[in-house]
Image (cartoon, rainbow, N blue to C red; front, side, top):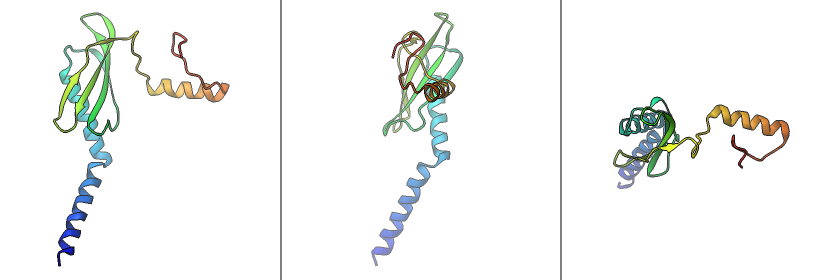
Length: 130
């Protein structure tokens, strides 16, 4: 008799786990990370680009927010860590563009095409550093 209630409980937990990792749930997670991180920046960036790692780590969401700082008049990036359990964020100090480059999907695709064409598997940044 106890097997039926335990199996019902196991099925309900499995269904909840499947829902938690659905594409809708991940999209909601990414939107929450983006919104929370933007709201926690110490300044409003001109034309910010937000790059949210699709699933984060087991405990944290991770985002990079890049944009023009009205204060320093330069491109900067903030790194934002989102605590999945507490739903709180911590934001790094601003990182100048010369120290951190966020690779966009178009840049990644162009580099992959170049590697395929040339057979050269090394990677270099704009300054020629690997």
